[in-house]
Image 1 (cartoon, rainbow, N blue to C red):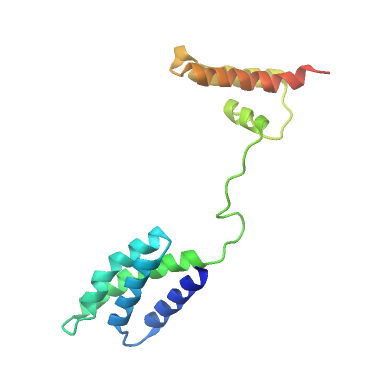
Image 2 (image 1 turned 30 degrees about the vertical axis):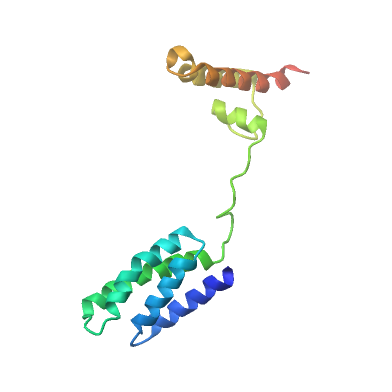
Length: 160
């Protein structure tokens, strides 16, 4: 599918750089993209551009109709660029799954990777318990999870 996206992108770039573009050919290309793309955003952009492109391909089309078609096509062009652009760094990666200890720390609002004293864990538990306790507006299941998180973080600290 990457080859198809690149072919569509190069065809739209050829249209974009042409002095007198053939709107009938571009409308055909937009119809092909709307029918054959696997990406929902690209399909919608092409389908929305199609009526404007068909209107601009008429011999009686004025300058304003052609400008509208060009703006609509620019949306298809932007989506194609986003889909074919190389991804650098950590963009587009799935979020890191948390270890059980990190999940417990997150529940209590404690920092990751820092050695904590029992008093710090207990204070964080008390702060979080104010909102998670059933009497404070929370529910019983969340409060039990919070208590289990505190117990799990406190347990390793008690062993010598």
